[in-house]
Length: 148
Image (cartoon, rainbow, N blue to C red):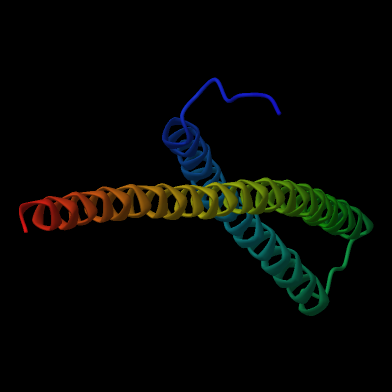
C-alpha cells in the first residue's frame, strides 16, 4: 500500500475548497439559467404581442404585410435562439451539478475516513493508557506484597 504524501487534514481542506468553488459555480450557473429563461420569456411575450397586434391591425398594403411578416420571423428566430441558449445553459448546469455532487461525495468520504482514523487513534491511546494503568497497578501490588 502506497503511503500518503499529505496529511488527511490537508487533503480534506483541499477537497473542501474545491467543493466550495464548485458550489459557487453551481450558484452562478443557476443564476445564468434563470436570466436566460427570463430573457426567453420576455422575447416570447414580445413575439406573442406582435402577433396579436398584427391580427388586429387590419393591414392593408402588401408592403405592411411583408414588414409584419419579416418582423414576426425575426422575433421567432430570436425566441428560437434564446431557447437554444437556454438548453445549452441547462446542459452546463447539469455538468456543474454533476461535478458538485462528485466533490460533495469525495468530501463526505474523506470526512468519514478522518472520523474512523480518529476513532482508531483514540482506541490505541485508550489501550496504551489502560496498559500503563494496569502496569502501575501491578507494580503497586507487587511492592505491597514485598513489604508484607
